[in-house]
Length: 59
Image (cartoon, rainbow, N blue to C red; front, side, top):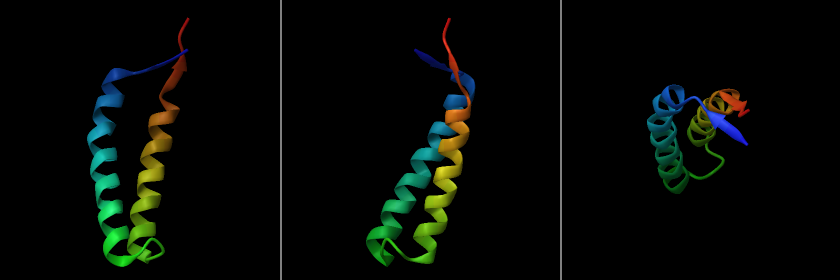
C-alpha cells in the first residue's frame, strides 16, 4: 500500500486540476496536437510525476 505525504499532495492537487482543465479547454479549442495543448500537457505530466515521486511505501 502507498501513502502520500498529505502536505505535498494538497499543494499539488489544485495545480493538477488547473492544468488538466486548461489542457482540456485548449484541446477542444485548438486541437489535441496544437503546440499550446502539448505544452500544457507536458507541464501536467511534470506535476503528476512530482506527485508520484512523493509516494512512499506504508509500513
